[in-house]
Length: 179
Image 1 (cartoon, rainbow, N blue to C red):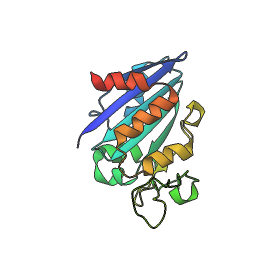
Image 2 (image 1 turned 135 degrees about the horizontal axis):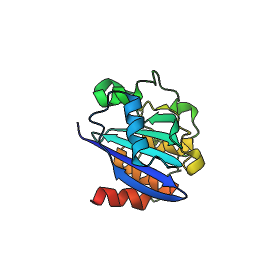
Image 3 (image 1 turned 90 degrees about the vertical axis):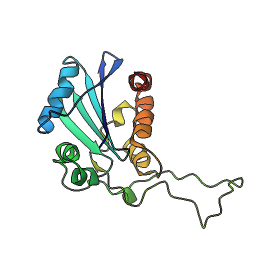
Image 4 (image 1 turned 90 degrees about the horizontal axis):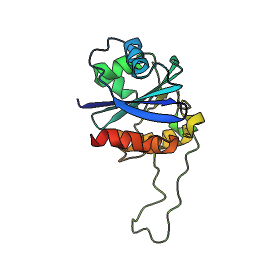
């Protein structure tokens, strides 16, 4: 499996992004320690872990404490050691996509697709889990995060890019990918 892990930290309204390795992590606390080590003085530390163009896990630490985790799909825990390590604390999907008010745009008259009705942006088999509100105070409400994770055709890197743009660290993460 191909993995990408980006630590994004904010100190006094300044964001920076760093690629990190999780290969030596034995448990979620090792992952949290790796995130803390990026900048121990960080007000907010985020870790975006993308795996195999299918899964995304976001971890958050506030001032190095209170680890919060969100995963785009609990199937990641069943499919890899890294997924199990990151989502181990989350036994079942915490959120049902059907209970979240997702904004579905009405089709326009110009749409050339012939369909029975508006297409739902939600992938039927996605089972997000964890704390979908972990980025709400930064500008990414739970409903939008869930919508992004449920859209067919969205890759984890697309979701990460959109989330980072919304919270103000898009350029830093884009520069990290370009290196």
